[in-house]
Length: 215
Image 1: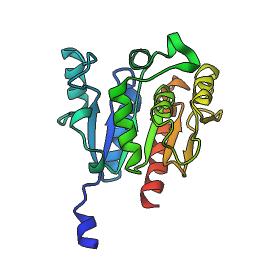
Image 2: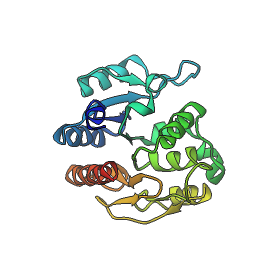
Image 3: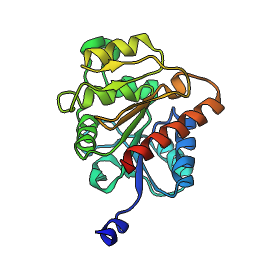
Image 4: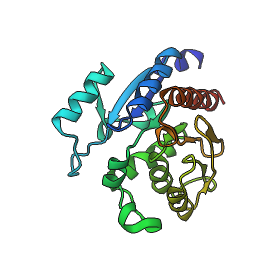
């Protein structure tokens, strides 16, 4: 059993967002610092109109320095954890929250990817705008109602609670751990404009993920 476990890749997926540069860089740093492999992932489905343009893809490749995977190429079982970054523009592109408010829905391909990851039981971390999309995506399959945070954003908190989760107000750099559902959330860049606080936030996020992996 020990030999089998040693062959399992210590790999953590990071779902990339062009608007979340600090979160991505500091998360990559934590992954490398703690001896894990990082797998940068972009949302792109063969049957979807949502595809990153060439310049954005080149930006991600420059930032990651390793090959980038697409969501429809990633098997959740190959990951030990998943960390999600989403900016405001992508939030509006991948959900209809702006128009539908509390009754919002999420892009079906995105939803399917996150539901598959959740069902594998891996720790899932989410920053800011990624949190309501995560909660909505896994609605109906959670062990209990998720307990999450988007920092202190009353509009997103309303959407989260409408999706059957509890939204907790937190300060910059604070992360919230939902051990029952293996979720770690924080306000991320949405809660602060200070790089030092985002760096601390990412460190706290990764420490929580490590706790859940060891558990």
